[in-house]
Image 1 (cartoon, helix red, strand yellow):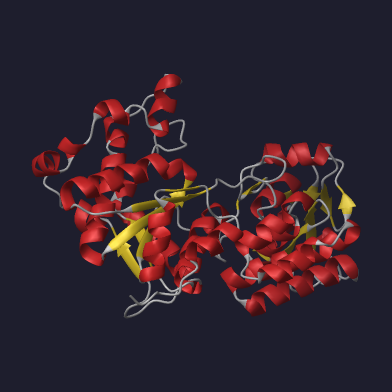
Image 2: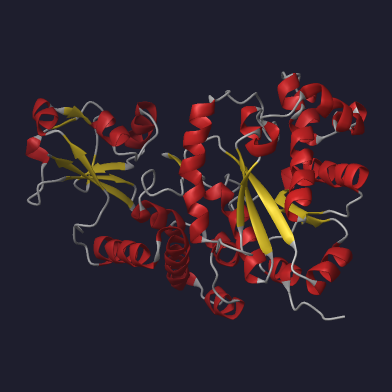
Amino acid sequence: MTTFKSDFLNVLSSRGFIQQVSEPDALDALARERSITAYIGFDCTAPSLHVGSLVQIMLLYWLQQTGHRPIALMGGGTTRVGDPSGKDESRRLLTDETIAQNLAGIRDVFAKFLSFGDGKALMANNADWLNDLNYVDFLRDVGRHFSVNRMLTLDAVKLRLDRQQELSFLEFNYVVLQAYDFVELYRRHSCVLQMGGSDQWGNIVNGIDLGRRIANAQLFALTSPLITTASGAKMGKTAAGAVWLNADLVSPYDYWQYWRNTEDGDVVRFLKLFTVLPLDEIARLAALHGQDVNEAKKVLATEATALVHGRMAAQEAAATARKTFEEGTLAETLPTVEIARRELDRGVGVLTAFHKVGLVASNSEARRQIKAGGLKVNDVAIGDDKMVLTPRDLTPEGVIKLSLGKKRHVLLKPV
């Protein structure tokens, strides 16, 4: 028998991607014998994915890099239901039009990580088989294989019930639909592995069981740890909101700064997870200490940004940061938000200005930052939350520089 030379599981393990694997020896043997197909599902709840989805995207990346075929499954169907995993309350139901718009916004990011085409990566949409299901037939053919007793023990369900929070019948069906996705992808594309975050373990295992029951298939599960920062914060959230992957929502510069601000204790772990640098190069960076750790953070920021926004945008962001923070100049390439000249002539409240440019999530957040000395206009700390910006605040370059802390800056430019 010819051995298919793949080191898929070893690569994932060495870079910190694995939390649990079902039948790891059997999966490893299969992956060495032939190219396998695996998938991860992404529901379309927003017009972009954010940094919290990067671990899953990188799982698909390394799957393909080690010789296997990834499927990025768009949840055009399951988004209509809503995954209760990790949620304290029901998702807001989205219209089909909004779901379609969100799907269009998130699908482009995958082309930056995966190679699509004949025999390569696939993009699928579970609306293709879920939206036209006959309810009674589905209950008879699929629903009969699910035990309500066992479904009540799933973390996503149990958590809601223990807290006496409402769980709709709609959401209760999500695990059945996700399991059916796995079977459909097995039938259509010979997909044998579903991957996801560790909160998806119960859902994925139900798909394995359903595949065995109705298709006599041997299927596998692989989950990754849910990523939090060294201080316990949720990955991908900042004071100004989510760190989106689409450039129209978060600029390449702000994206670069997000990674540059990584806590010291997270740098090595994030280099393994969110860059494609060789492990020996990461080991070299891991040996840096003291102020030299900042050099490793800059490498992390540039490499992570290059994957999402391209090498040129990453290098421009790094150059902008260097000019701004190391050379002390006002860089023309700082993120710029335009404002109508007549609006500035009338005067713009400083709270409104900082909210408008996205440095804070709300006026109340701006007030808290002002009390802490965290907001500056043209490098001068704001002392009065009733301050009004006018043309008198324009720099010689014709802009107003707004800053949150030492590392986040936006130029307000009248037009």
